[in-house]
Image (cartoon, rainbow, N blue to C red; front, side):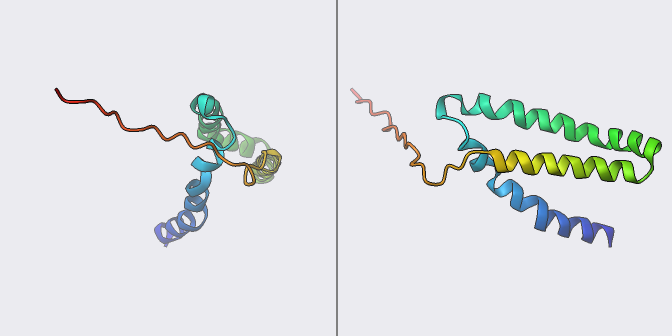
Length: 107
């Protein structure tokens, strides 16, 4: 039952988020700095997310169940504020850079 519950939660909450994440983040930066613009935030968030179980355990040991509940509620509020403050790019026409294939004559 635990495996089914985790699988369903990943299917309905985790995967839809990551389906649009790449395009959403890519739209926030111009093409010439896109990779270096996305990387610090994405990798920094990975470090923080990797440390959260340790932090939640320490907070639980100090404050009981309310500590991690408040911590994750605060993180959710911060995430919502960040998502709402990102600029909207829907009406912006995205530049298309289509390069012609290399055409070399064979002599």
